[in-house]
Structure formats: structure tokens, C-alpha cells
Image (cartoon, rainbow, N blue to C red; front, side, top):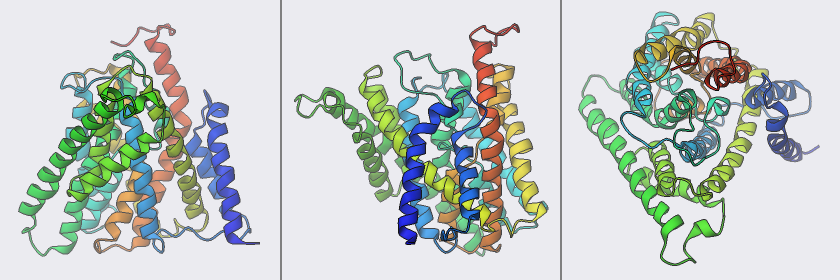
Length: 419
């Protein structure tokens, strides 16, 4: 039996299930990512000759596949958000990005230094890798399809979607700081890091994303010639073109492509907020994202099944559990104090700090840049364990929790509605 033929058959089956399972699992306390993770565990435990999914041996391939999955997910998130950007409407997002994320990085770094005793570069890297809320695996708690009403997004779904859309790109400066610490003898890197990695690259991502998004929005919806007005053709693959264009141009300019893609998507959506073409673009991106996610989670399950967690110590596992159960919930709840979200909404937003494909990308990228003084196997074990626990914990709780949030908001619960 050819290994390639087996992989093609399994890949086709996974793609088919990616189309079937969302409806089957709707309203059930079982997420699609969790199903694929469990399927990967079972498949790679069977004696059928599947190659071992080694993230160290195949680091470059993993980096680029996860990178593509994340950027596609960011486009989908930006197209789905119905609320226009602004300081007040997005206040919860700014709190999560500006306060909760740095506090989460610091908390994870301190835990990694205190428990496993990792050097500061590795501890800082782990904080950067695990801090961002993942835009890929959080579909059950994100906003749905684009709709006409700007106030259609409840605070929970909006906050988690907008946070995930921006914090994947904003984690990059911390990753670069960890790389600099790993390779520097002193603090001479701080000036260049602050000017290039923090200020310039972030600004380039924002500016280029806004510029490209507005230009594409004008082309899609307002081109003088009907032949150029792509919204009249209903071609969904244009969303992929916009994703790759925004990401590629911004990366060529040494900006943060993740930030640019999300901003581009928001700008396209804002060009004609209620146009049905937004649904066409979002639907295509969502299908591609679901397909890539299915394959990657099968591989994550295979990584666990083939001994990928052998290097995991109880101290490393404790860091991951502290992040998911203490650090993110606590920081997420504190920074929302006296904010837009009500008490129950604050709890939900702070709890669903889902870790996933973005964490795998950042670790694969960073390990190609520097030696962090900790075996790569151990870094992968801690990261893989944390993502796995997040998939299980948040996958089981997302549907019942969000159903309860919806019931309270719609007045179907005997308790007082949230403000």
C-alpha cells in the first residue's frame, strides 16, 4: 500500500467530514476541532503505516502551512465583524490587546522561569507563543456570517473575534524580543527592536492593510466599469486573492502581514457594509479555513499519539494549565472591569482564551531563528499539550456556555438580562 495513496484517501475523508460535521455537531457540546483531534489520535495509533508527524523534522513545512491557515482565518474574522471600528465600540478589544495580552505573556514567562526553570529567552518565547487567542479554533465563540445590522454582534462574540483578529499579529514583537534575547549578549538590541519590530512593523501592517482594503473595496463594489466590479460576479475565491495580496505586500515591506490581513478584511467589509458579496467572500474563506484546520488537527492528534508529549514534564504541563485556568481568565476578567461587558459576559470572554494553530506557527517560526537553551522537543511538548487541553476544554464547553449567553441576552432565562 502506497503511503501517498493512504494520505490522499485520509485527506479526502477529512475534507468531506469538514463539510458534514458542522451541521451534525450543531448545538452539541462537541466542537469540530475536538473531533479532528480525537480522530488524529486514533488514526496514528493504528498500525496502518502513517508517517510520524514530527514538527522538528518538518519544521519549515509546518511553519508555512500554519501560517497560511492563520492568515485565511484572519480574513474570515475581519469580514464577519459587523461593528465598525472605533474607540468606544471596540473598547473591550483594546483592553484585551493592550492590557490582558502583555499580562498574559508576563504571567506565562514567570511561570516558565519558576517551574521548569527555563532561561528568560525560552520563557519569553513561550509567553509570546501561548498568549494570543487563536482565530482558527474559536469558531464556536466567534461572530457568524456578515449581516446588515451593525449592532448584531453580542459583546462576547465580538470581543473574542476582534481580539483574535489582532493579537496574532501583535504577538510578533514579543517573539522577536525572545529571539533577540536568545542571541544577544546585552541590551543593545532594545533600540532596534522598539523602532523596527514594535513601531514600524505594526504601523506598516495597519497602514498597508487599510490602504489595500480600501482599494480592493473600491474595486469590488464601486469600479466605474461593471466588468471590473467583482461584486457583480459572485466569485468567492477573490477573498483568497485579497488575503495573499495584503499579506505578501506587507511582508515585503517588512510589516506585520497578520495585522494587515485583518485590517484589509475590515476595510473591505466597511466599503459596502450590507452588500451580499461580503457573505460570498466570507463563505469561501470559511471553507478553506475549515479544510486546513481539519488536516492540521489530525496531525496534532498524530503528534500526541506518536509520543510527541514524551518530553513533557509535570512542571511544563503546570505552566500550560496555569495559563488556561488561571492566568488568562484572571487577566481577561480584571482588564474588563467597568467596561462594556456585563459580569457574566466578562467571565465568558476571559475564559475562552483559546490556543491553537497560531501558537504552532509562532513556535515553528522562532525555532528556525535561534536556539533558546531548551530542547525543541520540550518546547513542542509544552505547546502541544496546552493546545490539546484548550481544544478539549473549550471544545466541550463552548456550545453550552454560548447557548446560555444567548438565552440570557434574548430574555429566555428567568434571571435578569445582562446590561
